[in-house]
Image (cartoon, rainbow, N blue to C red; front, side):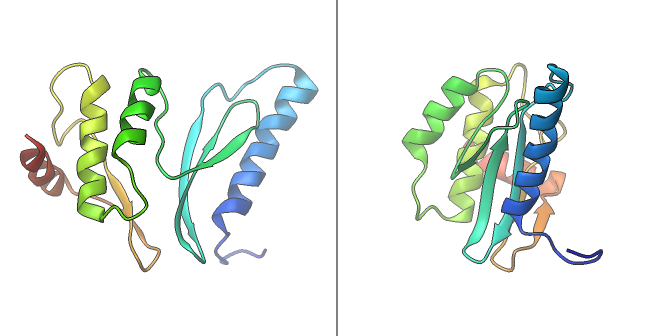
Length: 137
């Protein structure tokens, strides 16, 4: 790859995981300390990967990390399907967040990003999030 060229998501994930794994193996420590969710796209469409501090990585169709992730993953397993529309996916994401969220969820304390059919990533505006929050109430 050269500068200015797009990097395939799976290659980026492999490189990040390799760096994390190298620090784990050579130093015996895990300085990165957190799992990452990396989204991107390939020739088939949007992709989602989880990268752990150990350097392990996994592709997912839907995933949650952090506090209460077991319940969130169970919730996603029940609601996700391969034919889910973007609107339904956003609603499912918000409902998943609500499951483990402490306090009141609002457009000011969550962010939602989407990858569209043109493989472009964008973060929803607070106004858009507020509309979606109203729809799931």
